[in-house]
Each structure stands twice: as C-alpha cells, then as structure tokens.
Image 1 (spheres, one colour):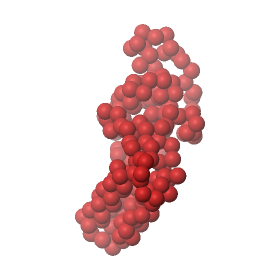
Image 2 (image 1 turned 30 degrees about the vertical axis):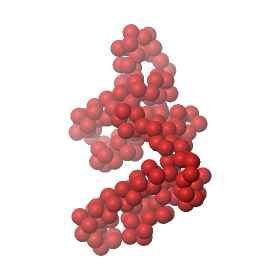
Image 3 (image 1 turned 45 degrees about the horizontal axis):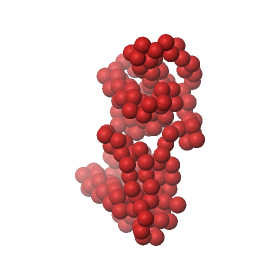
Image 4 (image 1 turned 120 degrees about the vertical axis):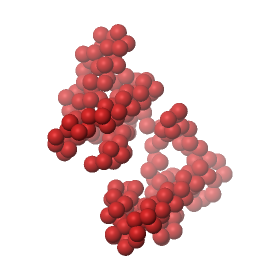
Length: 190
C-alpha cells in the first residue's frame, strides 16, 4: 500500500480518534500530521504490511500520550482502548461535513460519461490508475489526465453549490449548500 493510499484510507478515522481523546481540533491536526510523518519515516521497519492499521494505531496512541506528557498533564496514562476504533461512527465524530458523500456521488453522476466511470473506479473504488489504463484501454497519461479533469469538474460543482470552510491546511471544517444554487446541486446534496 502506497503512502498516499494509507493517508486517504486512515486519515479520517485517525483524526476522529485523536480528537475524541484530546478535544482540540488544532492539536488533533498537529498530532495527526506527526503520526503520518512518523509513518513515512518508519514505514520500512514494518515487516507485515497487512498489519498497517494496528501499527498506525500504536503510533497514534503513543503520540496522544506524548501530547499529554508535553503539556505536563498526568493524563499520560489515560484510558486508550487496546483496539483501534475502526467503526467510529459519525455521531461520535466532530465531522461537520456529514452528507457531503451524497454531494460527491451526485456530482459524479453529473459528469460526462468519459469521466464518470473513471472517477468512480479511481476515487470511490480506489483502483490504481495504471490498472484503469488497461481496463479502459487508454494510455496511462490520457487516463491520468481524465481523472484530473474529472476532479476539476467536481471541484467546480462544489465551489458553485457549496460554501466550504477549511482550516489552514485545507482540511474541510464545515460545508453547507449555498442559497440560490440550481436544482441539480440541491438534489445532489439533500
């Protein structure tokens, strides 16, 4: 599994877990960034790539403990469950972007056919672009270009129809439907 895939797959659940333990969004973002830096530096020491989730959890748990130690807080022995909360649901999280998955799917469905199936396979199913170039019988450069153009079209739909608030790193903090957006966007986000 490539580093970008690991980040994409585990970022949200790790952030939610960290945030549930420290209840400070900025510190949680900093801890998460440190976790992925440590992962990037030490990924070669992981012998069994299948156990990456447990390994990331250990790094995260230790980072939270270090956070409390650095604050001089005696919570360094706070209760951290021994099992990674893979099923951390949206009610437990502080995710203010609830429902955006419906928007994304709606926006993808509005894409022209030449982009729609490629974006679904690449972005939603996580199929590597090199495999997709074979599946669609396209040159890799052409496929990569279509994925990029598809992403750009979805981004334009979002900026047209959604008011998006981000933090200093570009992470979405809150999203809401803009008033006066045309009905095709309304149906995507409801």
